[in-house]
Image (cartoon, rainbow, N blue to C red):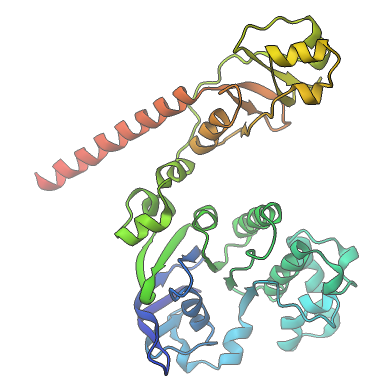
Length: 381
């Protein structure tokens, strides 16, 4: 078992600063728990106390039911993966030897450790051609993947991650987040992930621990509950005014109807007639969306302007199996106010209308309220 428990844990530094205040928290084995909060709220300190890089002033931390203060700190750390911002790679070692660091420290032969390192690289999507390169020869995203591979190489049951993706650009950050979700679905590690980004916390965590000023734990719950029912005014303010919109990502959109979608291929544009305010989705021969065009755009094409200059950006697409947040975003981000649903091949299969999304939300909440009332009356009967 690799569950983690904080019992009455506080950390006060010699200058009197209290970083963590009386923390009681249980992290279930195999869960992905995100510590989130503003700078200086104690989230990183709490995580670093798990592997004894920082010692608590009071209280007890246990891993798998064992008090970690009674364990050898080196052995404890070698049994946990650790990923930090900017990867923290050793610049004088090749990628494969960076990844093999912990297995070698645990007594594995260098040949066997490198073999396991290559397997870890496979897990995080790193090509073996990078194995003999040095960190300086990699992109920021590749370096972070190496850091994750190094943490996984010894197959630890616990993975600690301290703002690992905050130093990369938004596109790479999204890719790395998706990679972590894929890995967790396969490996089922006990992951403690620190971030100050509430969107990252909601996307990654199956549980969120929100820390506030003074090192107080404000709320620990599943993301949907944190968004829908913030425990304190601080949590409500931290998750933001658009927390209702974020909560839509936990609601299925499987019954939102797909309406008929008017499409046109580039070759057909000169022959069509559109009324003012009418839009058509431009698609290629495989029915993949290219953008939207209105009457002004059609006239531009007829006048000899490039199609790309005559189309409006398409907005976000709604993927198969998407949620209500994606459905609503697809509709409201489109210049035509019509979202485009696509299948696994990327082909357009129907239209999403914002009104239908909101009606679906209303139906779901009506059912939830009825169930809540039923449970209440049964308990008070």
